[in-house]
Image 1 (cartoon, rainbow, N blue to C red):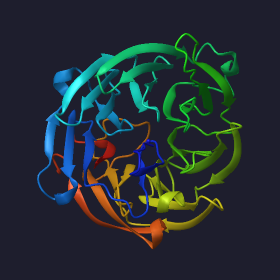
Image 2: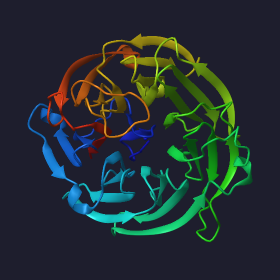
Image 3: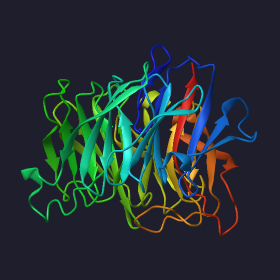
Length: 380
């Protein structure tokens, strides 16, 4: 997931942020979702090994909190509950939930727009995208437009689009479009008019033959001109690069020989490198975003690494390691110890090494804890 903050951070992610060189936030918090136990863990960056704040999310009616993002000002966290379909918005200052509604069947991801005006929710079971209009300063929110991806004629060919359930998404830098991965393979580009009376509309569609199934990681380039998208299975891993102005595919990299089950993504080195976490091979593939070449494979970063975010100073990565009994997933993604890996970046973001882990919940083989969503909140 990308977020931005004036004078502090340069826009970068999907799921996240890249620090401007030489500019530091006052501190940060690491927010981690345990979807197996319906809990939120908050670690303080100044003392990561101290006992975290733990918040029980089950009282709000959501089940399996799957993905978490912050709004552009980092004042509110947006949580997608994949089992119940709820989207929760939590005010970061006092941890109060100020919005909590069922937006559809299985809200897999809820992503805020860079302009702070809306959230787009990927509801996978009813195959719809739902818009939430946002006013974070007043804590006022409104469920607005939806688009049913089963009714668009572009998806009528079953062999080309076997299952058009939306899974993950990312806005373009100007908030006018979103790139949306489809569960059975393929990708949709959805236009999001600023005028609320105009409908959401699919403006481009790429079939399964172009974008493989199980697409997840979506992240904007540092300058916003590209969109990076990956897909992965037990036996494969791919990366796709799209031009966000023409909505054209400009590069496809087969990462299978370097890592399998490509999933979480993050930009490092101010956007020079793209890290791709591989859940099956327990490693990370590092791609140079100028040459589109794999420049390093980082081994030993953790067991079943899933999603990832970066510290405000750009020196550390934080990745979730799945539990032994995954609460969600379409294939075997079980880990050994549910935890968060703390990775020290080296060589300007080109390399890195796992320094230690932060345990999440029960650490026994019978543990139901299952870390998935993670987001770093800079203290501005």
